[in-house]
Amino acid sequence: MMHFLKLSTKIIIIQRAARNKLVNTYNNLHGPAYIKRHLCVNDTDFFTLEEINDIPNTQFLSYNIYLVDSNNDKTLTYTDTHFGSDGVLHLEDTAFPGPLASYSLTTFTQDNTKWYSESIDAQPAINGNEALHSAAVYTDSYIGDVTVQGTLENQVTGSTNWVDITTLTFTGSETEPKPVNFNGVFGHLRVSASANPADKITQILVRN
Image (cartoon, rainbow, N blue to C red; front, side):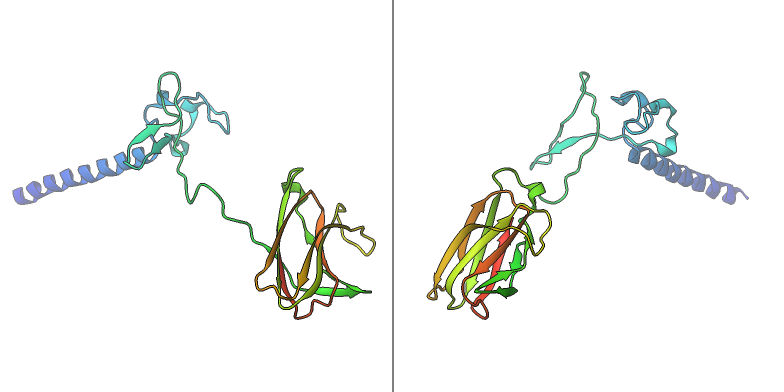
């Protein structure tokens, strides 16, 4: 019996330590103001406007915002007049987005003496008054002109009015794609060819 009681005392100590560990971990995961609500800079929840002290423990989270440099040193990036922190921000991935994908024009339809590509959205909503567009024409012994055309209309129909923006001339001796840049806010873009592009214009890449 005494041996049992002696072992039970040790088990109780282990259980108490494990329980305290779990409670401390739970509290820490809820942030620095979980126990001390007065550490919060704001008096109400930023979304529900509920009083900080009235938020149930199960629904309460607090955070800090730190800038971590290359030496792993932390610096508060947002504080109040008492140098109290306001939140935690963790930045994932890179700071700048990668380049947008290019449109590839490969299909042409003949209309009288010219051939026209399909039209593409020029994305006028995301471009300013000096929107920059880039195109690259890949050819294989193509002889003739390639003209970039644009329209201000929102929808392309058989009666859409197109205007010439810029023209590239090919002699058939080109061994590299020929690039061109142009500015302007357009609803749609397309390309016209003065000669049959079949097997001669391999592709045209356009990026808005």
